[in-house]
View 1 (spheres, rainbow, N blue to C red):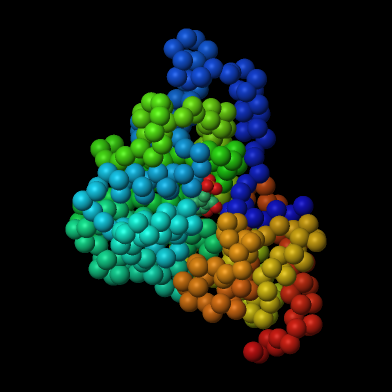
View 2: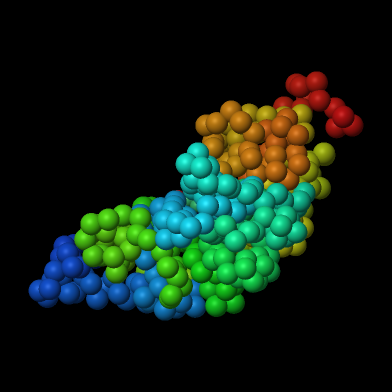
Length: 384
Ligand code: PLP
């Protein structure tokens, strides 16, 4: 199998699986219990928390473990809005992941004003629009670090400066940058930041939210005192251990992986652009996550390409995994100005740690053939 959908999820690294399996065999204690088997688990959870915190330049008390990136996004948005009842507006970008966008839409239905900051053709947010949309009523700005479909990286430092000048906290969804570029909460200056384990060769069902010390936020789940009262419920201890191990591997080999992947992605990008007529690359030419490639194949349907690749055992995606079964064109591709029929002709190819040169060679052999075959049987002409 050629797996080129690493933005949807990544294979669990064997070292992560081993650490989790060993932990599950050796430890069943509840980390809240005071006797030794509980304490032992708590120590392991603390170790993972410390490692993850260090990796993003945070303190361990600033990390809240959650059940997913989606939960972290929701916890940040509702947590801040609930803590600032005198405010009644939030600002998000038009290309957020549904985990942010749908939370914002829910608030809109509840009567809050939501401002959706548009993006340019490369997917970068309009900073003037952002500036103009902030008022004394704004509770929060939530703008993603990099987009999951096209990889464009947002100018977060500038966004934070604009919002902080007006005393407005900033949350960022860093699910697609964590592990793929340096994510440092001090440099970025954000108040809240979301990450998820399964995008970095860790297990599914565990995420974290960075909450800067001093940020006033209400808990999202109520119950026991786990996670310093920020997230009730007995922790997903094995998941957290796996997350910690995944980050240990990032510390170890993350940078090396990254430069190898960037080279492979560049080979693939050049190969597609030179080997297939009339393709359109989507995303920023420079400020983007290089292992994410998104192309339009005008005249074709992305689903047909995806299914044809699947028959060759090649996995890619038509956009975000969450909208895969929706008929609608991607909101991200529409926001960068693509016509719906062009947006529906796009596929996303995302490389990861286990992508090989051979995978890229297979893709560069199969994709041009598939596109040529479909084009020969459709009425499309490359001059259209
Ligand atoms: N945010 C972004 C940018 C994502 O790409 C994803 C996953 O696709 C999520 C949030 C959701 O993360 P999770 O699958 O852990 O809920």
